[in-house]
Length: 193
Length: 251
Image (cartoon, rainbow over all chains, first blue to last red; front, side, top):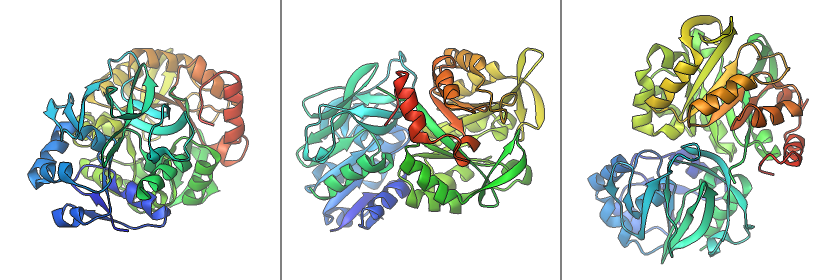
């Protein structure tokens, strides 16, 4: 199986690479279009600020590549947010794969949300073997509002979408690579899709 | 529901874990990578690695250790100690650290907080503050608590939030090493003052101290070292005890 992690200079890529290695696979870091298109699974990571990350994608032309991919693609954290229609952070349009906006927590709870919170209303093979209300590690100040593509929800002052799916595209707000055994199971599920 | 975090801290010197009383008289408590794996398996929510010799000796990074930890450990971890530039942070994050903690360097150059938040995002910027209560006033201290400043804790906390810190790790020098409980009054005030998570540090001696700091101290996370390193408290027992008291924890 050929696994690529999209390398565009925004993210804790090392952790994802190691998490995949712990599952017995090797992932390749790349920004090469052909290599990405030929992969069996594509992971789209992201940590940092949305508009500058989006600029980096545009700079490399990856903003045109990612939405046209046919194999399973998993966006993690900011990666998932960039796959949405619009991000309030830096007032930027996203890749418009998911038909939903990303907005800032209103501050009724501490921002950023940092720590372990529960995922529920699980609806996808991505969560095979994962129990309702399992804990995942999250770090974010902006969130995806609920929509029809929502496959998991989390509560933090409000209920929001902590995972999305549209065709071959998956997005998770939490960090499976940092979410202990349950997180590893979700990564394994993705690799076995 | 977001849970309260239990955070073992591994103080590092020469690649080994140490923990002193009031930051002096260091004792050796083992191999950091091995310890990190054990804690992750026992249910720690997060780990902090602090190179306590770094600030004094100007040693820059723990990149190699970070890489070894990231390879083995499947929970988030923060690295601190002697971090003073965007380049330092870039190297540590690229080696697999999730967050960095800055302390003296932020006091000397507060703009560093803005720069790190802009480049890497607030979520990975922890500002560690060591403070001591002197004549009723909490004052910031530097270099592992050895050097006093004229900066007031609460003013500094507000400023670091405004500059883009994602979290504050507050260590009370009055409580650190005493095992008499956390500085809950100061912690609760901090938690009301800023709207970013607060990690309580200094004073953990028994399980009740953790419950107290989450309830009375309004802390979002609690950090401790020796009670975990020397097996005085098992993390899983601690979490069960907290759950009994209706404190949300990941079990």
